[in-house]
Amino acid sequence: MATLSVKAMSAIARYSAIARYSALARYPTMSVRNMATKGETEKLPPPPEKLRRLQEKFQRPDGVPVYLKGGLMDRILFAITVALGVVGMGMAMNLYYTWFFPKPNN
Image (cartoon, rainbow, N blue to C red):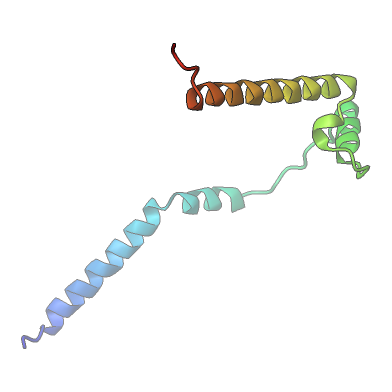
């Protein structure tokens, strides 16, 4: 079994340390984190009143799904979507029926 000299072992250790640090330097979140932690954070202005009212409306725990909280237009769009889904499923079932049970040729 061959033994490595102290000089060779220190060169290997140095190379592995350099490789480890260069891999960390290429890691993208490290640079982002450094930029994010430097300097002071500025305070954001309060949201506009209309946006605040909309947030309160959509986050209210009243049992209504969020896709229906927009009012009448949301209900109409939801009904149209459901109707088109039912029609599409019916057409698919009709297609499968004609594929599996073709009309006999006389």
